[in-house]
Amino acid sequence: MTPNASAAQQRTLAWSLLLAATVWLVPANLLPIMAVTEAGRGNASTIADGIWQLFEAGMPGIAIIVFVASLLVPLFKVLVLAVIYWRAARENNPLLSTRAYRLVYWIGRWSMLDVFVVALLAAVVEFGNLARVEPGPGVLAFALAVVLTMLSAHAFSPQQLWLQDPDGADHGYT
Amino acid sequence: MPKYRVVETMPAPALQCPDCGTHLAEPSRQARGAWRCPRCDCQLSGAWSLRPDSLLALTVATAVLWLPALILPLMRLENLGLDREASLLDCVLRLMEGAYLPVGLLLLLTLVIMPLVNLLSAGRLLWAARAGSGGGAPDPLWMAMYRHSRDWAMTDIFLLGILIAMTKLGDMATVTPGPGLFCLVVAVLLRLIIETLAQPDQLQRLLEARHDS
Image 1: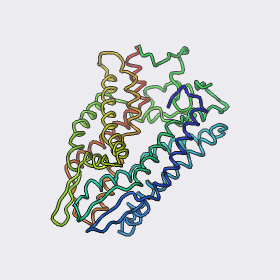
Image 2: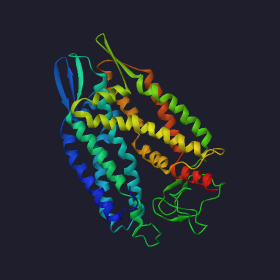
Image 3: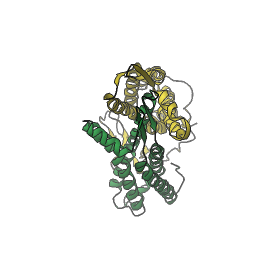
């Protein structure tokens, strides 16, 4: 967050980072994030597969946590940020947008959950030919998407949402 | 001395809300509860007063636990007579191999470097905020590091990741939690307490009050 950048410059940077994140979300959800090899048989799974496996294993609570953190939150975050950036130039409800921004800023970190699970499984399940877990290319795309959305939210400062507000205050912007 | 702070010409409005830029007068010290900006609802200080000495003690306790949490095994997996342990550092190193280096570096940043930066910056700022501390105001860089590390240190999320990994492995092998897990849980809890009580804006005001007068 550079305080000297103008509001429009900030939005351009935030938009481009958000766009890059959206692009990376596609391979993140389509490519396998890890491959489990058990007794010689390989089995690659995407994010959605992993959630389904948790459901089938009889752990709906954890499945819902993973579903929210790794599927819902990244999509929801990109959409909400896009709406906030879109409205920022002619903001008429700054309080609502600021609240949405704070929410998205806070929940964004939790998307890293899936990357951590893959790292843990890959580190601990290594029994040679009997069983091993290898990370898949999806985890790379997913991590990039999460970091890019976080950077996009950081590039935008909520101060500029209050520029159009009638009972204005001095923001230091020109 | 603090060159980053432009001294306000009018004395009454004590500070500007960081989110919406409104000039606000600081409430009396007797006021209880969290202080929020009336215009944008930004939390300007927590519900508790900031006590640097006790928070510094918690920071030191976290620092003691930090290294064991990093290198002791988090969990132990037993399968067909074979067993395997992995620590936090093993997880990071495992993804640093080959094409997954960027993810490995990201894990290094969020699980090792940023928690360390958080510890050091919190320690430095709280030390300067103590009543009897000598020396000048800390470099504004420490505050910037503290703010960033609060966003990028993700050991709390990693804990949830451990829980999910353990349940996933439960049906395939015997999983036993290791000593590293205990250290990590306590370190994360302590960090959450410190971060909740030492709000950056509140800490910044305390530092300015200590070193301006």
